[in-house]
Length: 329
Image (cartoon, rainbow, N blue to C red; front, side, top):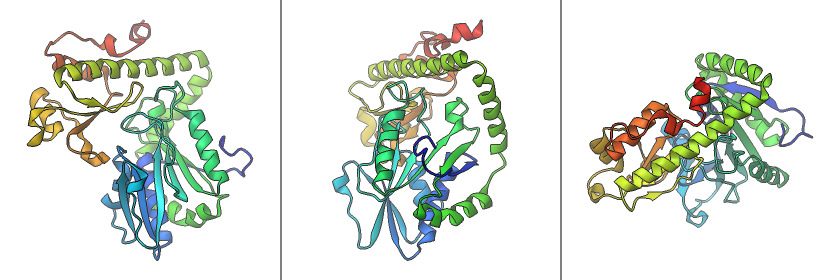
């Protein structure tokens, strides 16, 4: 609503997580025009849930997913309509993203657009609003959504939300398919998460300074976690390439190791450290890449750091949690 305040109020809807919205949007686009072909594209690395929504959950005969590093790599087949996913801050590297193609349909994933993420203290809010306004002014169809769970540090509580742009004739034509899918697949698990978020919003509205302090501590903690992990990771695996930036909610790296020719990077970390991480293959990169969550429990991240350095107690929770002492008091 703050992007287009002059527009009629759009339809607000909450779901069982942002992934629910992604799958519903892809379903609505593909099934509303079964005689048309769609190619969903995104610059790598990307959130693995996007290609999964196109081809990993359901099979759409008229839709495919294509990863690219340079837009010039995109080769459309005759009659195909381009749809671009844009995630900003990007998962898994935390960088700013905006549309890179001439796609008429844009799916804007703002799940990490919080003041705690990115490297500008605002989750790239102003820059995201700038490109989304330009896209809409150019007549493009933009579907943007967010997730309350990331904003409150409750990943897994499952509460995604969207302001559905019913004032857009194309979006309106998809609404029955979108709403029907959401209604038919709603999972009750989101109810508890939504209740928690409403309680938090009410509480924080009465203590603005505390809320701002918590968000600042979250951002500083993420920055510190990335810096420490990058340092120790490069000490353990010299010449590795770190793609993620301080402020990213995830750590994404290309591992340099002589065993890479015969093993996945994720398997090497499991072998060396007894730690399970994501492989980069599902995010548009090779199996030389790994991704891990920086928003997890301090105790787990501390243990991972200590395993990297080979010292049981070099790092403590206070090293990865800014404000821990103040909160404890």
